View 1 (cartoon, rainbow, N blue to C red):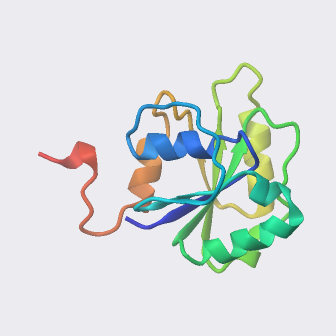
View 2: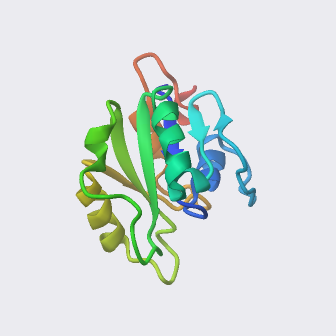
Length: 151
């Protein structure tokens, strides 16, 4: 599997998505530092929300094959400037989270991620596992076997 780094502001769903991708029981856990797993790097939201910490994300991105920019469908604004993806020499995908929240505006979040430069965008409800198989399939490399493909 290709390694993905998840970036987004606090409470955008990075840790919940990490748990869902790993097949774990979903429980709230505030990420305090950069967490490395086999194929996932989970980052604290403060890193993208604080200018000086944001530089660290650029360095951590070099340790991944894919950068995942998360944006909650409930957000009233986007932290991502237009065409920011050209600043990274890695593939960048957008991930819209909290798609079933009563205040969700998935189309707005999608437009913001497209404006940031994301060509591929996933729509995710981590609690219901919606969108999780698509992300895992996307990260899959030749020879990888996903859990539902095992005999």
